[in-house]
Amino acid sequence: MANSNIYTLVEFGLFLWLFYRLSKQKIVLFLVMGIIGSVAWAADNVVFHSIWHDNAVFRMLSSILVVYLSIDKINQVLFNGLKEAYRQTDLLLCFSFFVHYTYKAFLSTFNVFPMGLHSEFYTRLWLILGLINIATNLIYTIAILWIPKQQEYILRS
Image (cartoon, rainbow, N blue to C red):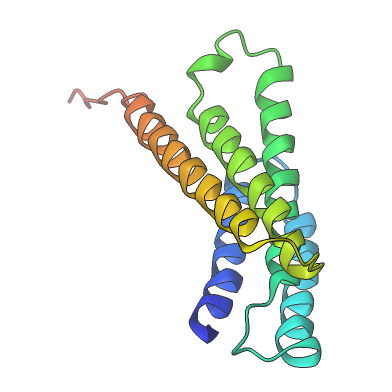
């Protein structure tokens, strides 16, 4: 479990870096999000729980921040007057991030606030996550195939 808790912190940092590269916002916003995320991860893994347990609070927080950044990027692509927004691979990627991490945040709430529901209910929630994971991976593949080819530049001498 320690590996997955460390992985979630690394994944969160990589998402911050990705959205910094995709957006036109200043780095200060991403540094603040990174500091907030790091403090939340440390508090969740050291103060509230052990690093050896599933710590859903940070997972929920990081999922919510990825959803926020995805919505922000989708709005930038759709409402900046781009006539061919459907050709933007950023739109597909951020839409799939939005769907996947919205559901992950929803699923994490059941770990943060246990409700004592039947185990079959939780099994079906995880099954739905698996189906969403398959769908988002297909969207990632389509987005990668959709990346426009760069024009070749030939220097004439």
